[in-house]
Every structure is written in C-alpha cells, then in structure tokens.
Length: 436
Ligand code: CMC
Image (cartoon, rainbow, N blue to C red; front, side, top):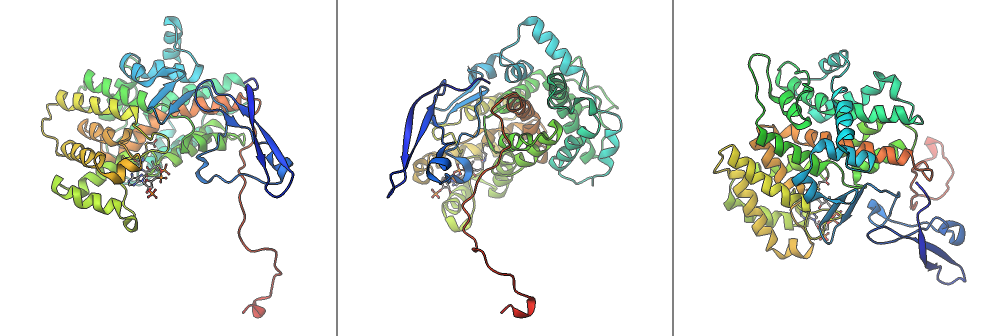
C-alpha cells in the first residue's frame, strides 16, 4: 500500500509547557480524516488513552467502509443492499479478497479454485473423535481450523504470495465443510462430503442436512437466504474478531492460526455470539406480556441484563444489514409456510417497544444484524448452538482478506498497544516472614 495522503494537521499542546506536536491529518477516501499521532511520544512524552480503541485507527484499509450515523456499509465501495440483492457470496469473496467484482472468466476460475479445495484431509476426520459429543461447535471449529496448519505445510509461508493465495482458498473453501462436520458430530450423524456441483450456500446446506439414507434436495429459497446471510456477514472492517486476526497476523503467525484466533474472538456474546443469545433471550422471556418486565430489567444497570441483538459500536442510527435481514426473515417464513412464529412476533413487539422507549432512543440503540438472523436460522432448522458457527463461516473471507491486506502493507508492524500503568511503584522484595 502506498503512503496515504495527508493534508492539514492537528496541533496538540502540552499544557503548562511550550511543547506541542503536529499530527498530520491522513485523508480518507470517504469518512473522517485521522490524526497521525506517531510522533506524539517523541514530541511530548505522552501516549494516548483509548480503551476499546473506539477513537483509534489501527491500520489503513481499502476493504470495507461503514458510516455508522448514516447506516451505510460498503464492500470495496459497493453498497451492501446492492450486493445482497444482486450478487452472491462467491462473487463477494472475490470482491473482498481481490478488490474487484470478477469478470465472467475470473469468476469461473475463482469458483474452480474454491470448489477444488472444499474437502479436508481425511485424517482431520479423526480430530473430531477427540471432542465430547456435547462440545460447543465453536470450540470444535476453533480447534480444527487451528489444526489446519498441521496439515497444509505448503501454504504456511506468509511471505510467498502464492502460498498466501492458496491458504485463502483453503480457508474459504474448507470452513463450511468443517462447520458442517462439527454439527454432524454433535448430532451423531455421519459426515457428508462436499458436492462441487452445488453453489457455496447450497453445498453448505447440503452438508448440514443430507444423510446417506435418502436423497436431499436443497430448497432454492433457503439457499438464497443462506447466501444472503453469508453476504451480509462477510466483512465488517476492524471489529473485535478482525482486529484479533490482524493482531495475531502481525506477529507473523500462520494464516490458519490467525483465523482460529478470529473464531475465538467472534464467539463472545457481545460479538458473533449475539445471534445465539437473542434466541436464548426470547426463549427466556417466554411470551409478549413479559416484555415490559424484561425491558425494565435491561434498563436497570445493576441487573447487567442487555437487550441482545440491539446496539452496535459503530451503527448509531440503524444497521443496514438488519433491514435486509428482516425482509429475508419474512421471505423464509413465508416459504416455509410458517404463519405464526411466536419468536418473530415477540421480536417485532420487542423492537416496537424498544424503539419508542427513551432509554434506547437516547442511547441510539437499534436492532443489529443478529436480531433477525437467529429467527431465520431457527426457521431453517439450524440449531441455536450453530448460529455463531455460521457467522464464522461467512466472516472467514473478511478475516482472510484483512489478513492478506495487512501482510501486503509495507507499513505493517507488530501490533503492540500501550497502557497507562496505575499499579504499585518500585518496591523491595521482603522474605515471607517479614511480610505483615
Ligand atoms: N441493551 C441495553 N443497553 C445497552 C445495550 C443493549 N444491547 N447496548 C448498549 N447499551 C447501553 C450501555 O449500557 C450504555 O449505557 P450508559 O451510557 O447508560 O452506560 C450505552 O448503551 C452505550 O453502550 P456502550 O456499551 O458504550 O456501547 P458499545 O459500543 O461499547 O457496545 C455492543 C456495543 C454491541 C457490545 C453493545 O451494544 C451490546 O452488548 N449489544 C448486545 C450484544 C449484541 O447484540 N452484539 C452484536 C453486535 S452486531 C454483530 C457483530 O458485529 O458482532
């Protein structure tokens, strides 16, 4: 990546001294400029304090742009609404990874590269036996993806562009196979080998649902919905799991280890685990008449209860993915002939109450992508403990693209945040008998 353009600056003055530091303003192609404070310590002897990194740009990126106030999400400049409506997941993978939508021949070649990597090494099957049947599939996914580095030694050299490319294909192609294996293992069914004549989403549904005893036909409406879920979750700039992948990758760790780190970070209920948590929450509330009591609990800080599927670090107006997800939710329920889905009724009632309540309005808390995705997945027959796994399947391309961009960036350095130390100052060791 060439040096970013700077124009203008911010001057930071240390009060009570005549010292100041000029931070050049790095210009974004869209969105706010960022102040480059790399000389701050040398000039003033101070660092910056930004827990949660809410005000800190840790890298330059050309992949995804979010305008949280306007509810805009762009992949390489394309609005998410257009991609969800007119593109498909494999095209989006090409876009995120290579920067452009593929031409016809490029798409054919890319599809070929993905489909010829969908199988996993036969020995990986034995890995699953080591897990308890009731293991959470995210635990299995994390372990098995990390283990890929022990199987594919020919794609571990991060400095070789061809090896990086092969690692990217392998990760994008194999993650649905491993996710489906984790599911099949948890329900005691045989693993289903991938079928390369199916689309990415169709093949994933096939590996999740088919059994050797009978023919399984993929419902095209459900495959379309799955494809859309994958597109909507494919990337989301520097979120917690992506930043984890970048941080792990900044040490030179191999790509499979980095993606395993991303999976671990995604698992938390404040991040990818939220879709699972939404369903759990709706189940615990039980029926619409209990919603007001639940909302009161959410508003009581001492209860530590959150309205799962609401709020976002960046979106402070609406989450454009949630809007598309809500429409898809209705389409899926109609296709499946589900007229009265109590969970959906409850979700809509919850949304209505929350959006007219000052607590949520004043804090700019709106439904996020996970508020509706859980209901769609449940209607599709996917068990709750698989929800976050699906998110990981979709996000793998985002992680891989961000990892690749970072490795190819000459400005890349090992990630190493600072701290403000407020612990004990230097003191002398005392023998145990002398400690009071
Ligand atoms: N329910 C109740 N109150 C909330 C919620 C919520 N879901 N989210 C934020 N708040 C309150 C929070 O307590 C704080 O109140 P106050 O100002 O009185 O202290 C205020 O809103 C600001 O919140 P914050 O904690 O500063 O927001 P954040 O940007 O640090 O957190 C979040 C963002 C997503 C972690 C948080 O909104 C949350 O935990 N939401 C529920 C979990 C969820 O749905 N996560 C999925 C996010 S979308 C998928 C993804 O990208 O992973």
